[in-house]
Image (cartoon, rainbow, N blue to C red; front, side):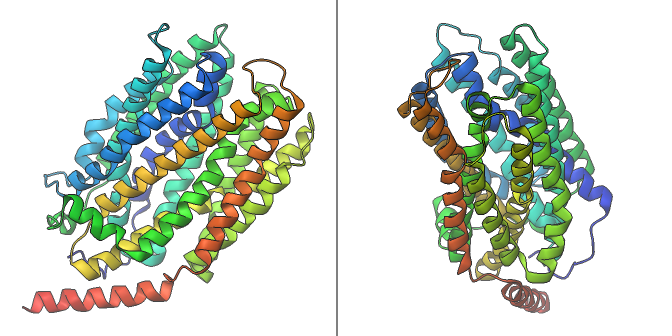
Length: 451
């Protein structure tokens, strides 16, 4: 059983080393979330309904790979730990897969090209994200220190997203957009490889977590989904992340056809959103230490509900009001990721108390799968609505199409955030509950050592 009494702050060097890989991931995350559908629909000109089918196929594949990766990671034993070997193994393939995502090589088979590239990227992301996220839960057992770990990680992620925003500007510097996407994709993929290697060499695992769990496969998954605290938190996250992803997918479409701003202004809007997000992180950490993670998360969800709903009333070419609205919405962005992942690490302690085992891999495998489900769901909803309201690639859009874009950009995500907040409202897992769990774990450990 892991040492639950180790509550001192981790060295800043360890926190920065751990966070570096997520900086690289942020650079990939923004283009994949914001630009991918736009690239294939508006530049490559793959029909939206085929894009939707490709995403669904990839999501079905993820249903197998994510929990499987969690199971494998939990049961790995090596000189470098049970999480770090996969960071080393995936560093180069992930960078290459990202490059290929933006470099269609089969112009006569665009759908097959998209499906293969999509599956390759998200499989490599599984091999990276599941062990990487699991490692965070093992770095410290302390309630507030875990939030600090996630604060560093999410700060790096948002900085990566800021660098990812340059993706749009860099692509615009090429005469051929297809060439631009390919070259910039190669550069960003290479940086991702380097960032993962920095984390691999800069972080060490606690040997206490290397004990092989007894329950694996479907039995381990059943034990995880029977944890009511986990299911409750996951339901909150699913709705919140759909609320985050639908406008993220809609941004390039809405700004081009509704707000009617060029690529440079698109860049500044993203920067405003992300700069406010990273500046707000210390405030969320402070709020969490005062009122707890649950209520801080609730405040962030309500903030997102109101700020997203207000975007509906933006007017074409009204750049300054749009920048202000994006900045207000961005203030709550980091809180969703920091607090949900920190609470999840605490919930895994509850599982250890009940089972005597550490199953971070399966927990984060299921979590990562559901994270990708929300990506697919948001893309499917957006693409289906765009098709139904008459979207035509690279053409002036009708009033009906613009109205559909406004609803998708504002009111639909606001509704998702509100549902998430209402689910979280009765979530029973608080600081006091976690304190009781830690006390019980210490007693259990002391009893095991005395036998």
